[in-house]
Amino acid sequence: MIVSDTFWDFEHAGWNRDALATSYHQHLGEVTAGCIPGLLQAVKLKAGDKILDVACGAGYVAAAAHKVSAEAIGLDFSAAQVRLARQTYPHIRFIEGDAEALPFAEKQFDAVVNSFGMPHVPHPQRAATESFRVLKPDGRFAYASWCEASKCIGISMVYDAIREHGSLDVGLPPGPNFFSYGDLKFASDMLGRAGFRDISGTELPLVWRVPSPEAFIEAISSGTVRAAAVLNRQNPANLENIRHYLRKMILGFEHDGGFAVPMPALVVSAHKPMHH
Ligand SMILES: C[S@@+](CC[C@H](N)C(=O)[O-])C[C@H]1O[C@@H](n2cnc3c(N)ncnc32)[C@H](O)[C@@H]1O
Image (cartoon, rainbow, N blue to C red; front, top):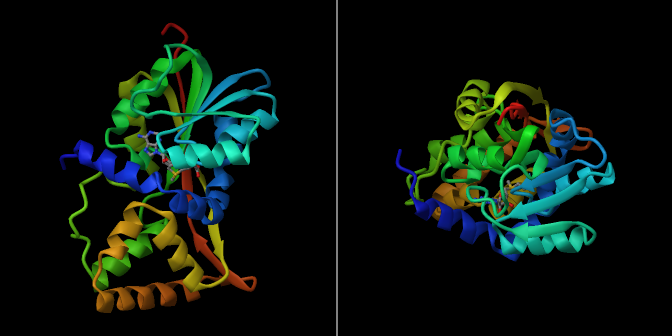
């Protein structure tokens, strides 16, 4: 599949909307936050370390790193996300920038993290190589991403519903496979090519707690870029069938007065060798 720069433009236009950034923050931020302890552990963060949070969104990982006295910087290509991050954590430095062309000299950081940003860049290999470049020798990189489709029901059921009752072929610019990053073999190949060594992964059994099936559908439609775009381009009759499919699926995850949808994620950890 050829991934063109139009994919970057598509993602950028989506994430750059304030309403989308706010919706993501309200609904998905608390799900992805489940990976923060794993990410900080994977980079062996300690007080005084300089850490870069790439594709930081509203700045969750940078904020957690700051709390343990690391010197944290958050970077995101969306002005809307950077605005929200600065509002949410005014004491932390956030900058606009591209994960594939980091605006830093080489060997600046003890740790680089990327929390759920990898599936959104057109050329993940470039993003991996850039993270490697800005790390100091002996530095550590970690990313979090959703597990493969068969495990990450919360995301895959949206695409299953569309495949079953609508069409995935709605003219979006082609992008990399969203689920590849949750595969350790894929991660090892990509990070190994960037120069990283000692690559390992830990699966985390995250769940997305929603009060109702409608709340889930609303959050996907307003707080994501690719999934929302595919949903919003279905014709009304198909969309109603898709919603019906999703409602039925979500009702199967009833738990504790609400619904707990499985969203497992893989945290991948990698080391930049000393001699680089
Ligand atoms: C799924 S959100 C993750 C946000 C946050 N890190 C979290 O863990 O919840 C993906 C983020 O990646 C950012 N992003 C996507 N492509 C990017 C790129 N090429 N460079 C920098 N940020 C990017 C988006 O603006 C968005 O904030």
